[in-house]
Length: 313
Image (tube, rainbow, N blue to C red):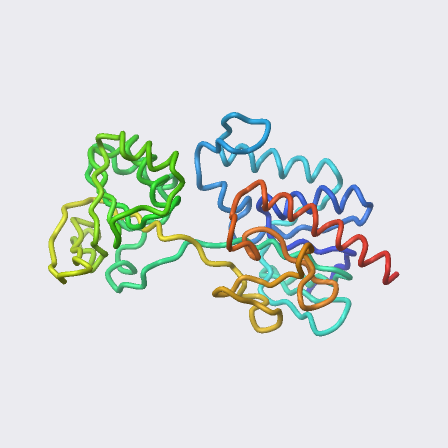
């Protein structure tokens, strides 16, 4: 028989927003339970140097998340390694079903499920995922030492991935459908000064090709966005870096969303369209998408939940 557990505050997600919510909810004596989700620690566990976390000139992303988790635990937050698969928000206490079978009931819920990498949706991209096609340079870049690789995209994610991959690759071709990048100027400056990176403007990925036995990438076919001309570029690795989409599957049919699935919160608050449910971090932030702003929203969500519960006891 499935175990049922009750908590005043259930935190779903474990990035900067989730762990910070855990710290503040614990300090408020709410005895929160945090369910880590499919990617404990969130997106920062798949990056390397973080240069804009206050107090650390430079810190490794995974190390920062280990410290944040330890901080939440030290404050008294119970952290559970599990995945919430269903969330019933129709009445309080809210009911969350987990992959392990445990059922959590909660007087308030803080959603901090973050965002996930976007894919192009090509059949060939799907075929070679994990066999030369990746969305995480820090996870897979090591495998391409001395090889030529390509990065798809034109924003911060793409430039950061391209720069990181120069640590391993002999050449990185950055493929972008326009002729200018949308990344921060400091990142663009670094890219322009790096001799290993060659931008390819006005092109988009048309197809990934390679071998079937063993399965592996040999190159890509790219299409000129103006002329339609197809050309081949040899590559052993293809890194898709076109941004992220909010992980709002649990609540997209119950909470108000916008901008492709981001959860709507009231201005100056983390309150959602359902009283007692709060959202923080990249799940709701389509504008800033920074670790520090996510942490700030995690703090706000815990304080908002505390005030909500104080008014409903």
